[in-house]
Amino acid sequence: MTAWDSLAARRTGIPVFAPGHVWLAGAGPGDPGLLTLDALAGLAQADIVIHDALVDQRVLALAGPQARLEFAGKRGGKPSALQTDISERLIALARAGNRVLRLKGGDPFVFGRGGEEAMTLARGGVPFRIIPGVTAGLAALAAAGIPATLRGINRAVVFAAGHGAEEDFDWAPLARTGQPIVLYMVMHNLERITAAMLQAGIVGSTPAAVIVAATTPKQRVLVSTLERLAGDARAQKLEPPAIVVIGEIVKLRDDLLGAAISAKVSE
Ligand SMILES: C[S@@+](CC[C@H](N)C(=O)[O-])C[C@H]1O[C@@H](n2cnc3c(N)ncnc32)[C@H](O)[C@@H]1O
Image (cartoon, rainbow, N blue to C red; front, side, top):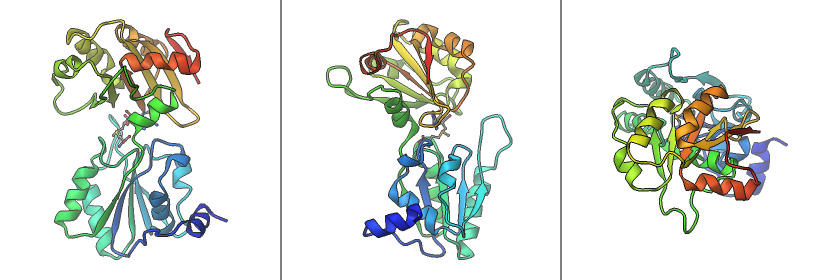
């Protein structure tokens, strides 16, 4: 029995993928167990799956036998499809009568340009559905044993991108909140951003962690402090994709896993 047969047998109200529609779905951080049932329904019914680089092969393997897989990835520094080309392709495929699953890593609306794609579909009059996904910022923390919130420690979590058009982003207002900061797409700028955060007033001994390839067999966790994080990550040769978290919540990993806060990489 396929995953789809099993889902169809157990669940009522499975959305039907109509020809000419686009589903803009989150694939989660990697582990196929973190895929939503609606995303699985999309994979099973789609005629074509247009996916990003960070969508795990184990997730793509759940596509139905009729589905054609098409890569439309964007990776920093490497040749990548233009956003306008991707959006136009979605529209053209839908107008040709295909069931088009646009599958993006994590959640499609969190640092994933899903908002732009949805707006283009709306403007083009193409019917579409948004399927949320488990975003890497939350999944990586949970997978590393770091609670995103804990009563008495924090009341908010800041999600920020370490890479963007405005490279002179002012970190001081975020630092002043005293709340943990979770950073996406930060590895290439880690030195500069951690320095900016120290400058913005975050104490150098604040616990910090890098979680690489969360929820995949390649997951690695580095626990350090803000002032040592960039050097430790370089020494350990940590590469994207990674989530960085800065804040007292990182210390809780100690209690959960019994690990000391020192520059240490664990599986
Ligand atoms: C373009 S953003 C897409 C974010 C995605 N839409 C989400 O909600 O997770 C790509 C960044 O997400 C983070 N990321 C995605 N998957 C990850 C994973 N399995 N482990 C750690 N970080 C991940 C990394 O910071 C990576 O550079």
